[in-house]
Amino acid sequence: MKKFLLLCALSGLAFAANMHFEKNQKCSECHPAIYKEYQTSQHANATIFKDKIHGAVYDKHPQHWKIEKYRCGACHTPTADNLSELLAPNNGVIPDIDNETQNEAVACAYCHRIEDTAPGKAFGRNIVSKDEKVYFTKKSNPGTSPFHGLKTNTKVFENGKMCMGCHAHKSNKKAFDVCETDINQMAPKKNCIECHMHKVDGAPHTKSTETQHTFHGFPGLHGDLTNLSQYIGMKITNTDDKQMFTVTIDHDVPHASLLHPLRMGKLEVSVARDGQVTKMQTRELIKVIGSKEGASPSPTPPWLATDIIKDTRIPANTSKAYPYKWELKSGDVITAKFGYLLVKPKALKKFDLQDNKEATKFRIIKEQTFTVK
Ligand code: HEC
Ligand code: HEC
Ligand code: HEC
Ligand code: HEC
Ligand code: HEC
Image (tube, rainbow, N blue to C red):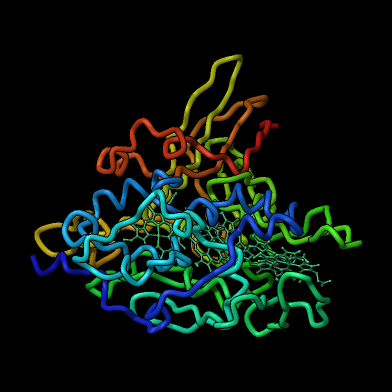
């Protein structure tokens, strides 16, 4: 029983008192384009009510059914007006769909009040400014707004460190990191903000004459993968004797190809000859967490995991070659599709997500065809 009283003692003091944040809706008055993009993002939809996958995992989590705790709220609903009660066990307080402040999810004002981030034991920590209506930007000379103050904060807004309070890692009670963004510090050609908040057309606010702003749809595996696809390369080659071919995925990203243990990456390959299509073996990219105790390593839910028992993901800034043995002929057409599933098939049933379209859809980031000479 004791092992269920898990997921770590509170790592920070940041959540000690409930803070007040301006509503997302308020920002829409003067930042309509950014607000519209943001509404489509996982940040705006991170609650158990709007994100059915998060909801499904919380549903099965002992924090829910055993101790009525929603520690997830520290990152999924950080502006809840009863956050400290949500984070505490055994007080009958769990997420409430009628609480407006919980539905704000990862709110605009929360992010823009992150002064700094710090490492934490169970997960990283956001140091949030007490100034309710002063927002941080990386611009060194911000103008003025009739609604709020602005402060330059290049320390964390320029290099993406402001993302790390929530994204660095999350460990369970056994001090095992269930998720981590293992950023490759040796190859920081680009940072989180440059890749996940690219520039798009449109003014950042209604009074602005600027023609571009940073995109707030935060593309990741749920959304449109068009922009992120530039960081994934694919090459198909065959050997001279035509007995073999190779699909190489160049993962030019400073973190591993999948960050959440629920995910699966897939490489689907087929060869077409005279109208006949032959499917090759699908290659799967997964990180399986579980336990190495007992006779053989076995998968467990995240709250019980102590080890990585299998990892076939592509590491940061790495190319991986996938060879296929096949007698090719001139004119054969090889098609390769690389993409992701939000929930790996083996986990679907465990979380009752078999019929969830979002969870089961194959999201292709790169597709290529190659004709054998
Ligand atoms: C009444 C209009 C108004 C409202 C409401 C408003 N803003 Fe602004 N905001 C502005 C204006 C005007 C600027 C531009 C200042 C300048 O010229 O740099 C601005 C600038 C900003 C910037 C800095 C942009 C930059 O250039 O780097 C941020 C961040 C920001 N607002 C966040 C918010 C958030 C978050 C909300 C909602 C909680 C919000 N704003 C609500 C008018 C508004
Ligand atoms: C330290 C911050 C943090 C905490 C605490 C946290 N999460 Fe998350 N969670 C994240 C981040 C960041 C992501 C996005 C990761 C990604 O997409 O790789 C995420 C994504 C998820 C997803 C995937 C959602 C989807 O739509 O695919 C699930 C499921 C999830 N979290 C469940 C939980 C549960 C259940 C809890 C509480 C027991 C929890 N999380 C606590 C930060 C956190
Ligand atoms: C060079 C561009 C690039 C940079 C820099 C980058 N990412 Fe990514 N990120 C990607 C791509 C491409 C994907 C799609 C998945 C993959 O890696 O194959 C992705 C996926 C993700 C996902 C979804 C993973 C999942 O399993 O659901 C999250 C969350 C994420 N990135 C967060 C971050 C954070 C936080 C940083 C900064 C520490 C960062 N990224 C830096 C390109 C980048
Ligand atoms: C997950 C964190 C996060 C959330 C949520 C978020 N922002 Fe931002 N925002 C950033 C970062 C990072 C930047 C880029 C760095 C900068 O310009 O300071 C940025 C930039 C901006 C800018 C300047 C854009 C430009 O190109 O000049 C404005 C204005 C802004 N945000 C307003 C908002 C509003 C309004 C919302 C909600 C509708 C919002 N932000 C939600 C992190 C966030
Ligand atoms: C307050 C915590 C918090 C902060 C700060 C934060 N994130 Fe997130 N982020 C989350 C959570 C929680 C999720 C998962 C939401 C879900 O799927 O339910 C997430 C999901 C994502 C995803 C995955 C989207 C997808 O389609 O799967 C990306 C990409 C991402 N964040 C990028 C960023 C970047 C870039 C920053 C910094 C500018 C940032 N985040 C800052 C909490 C945060």
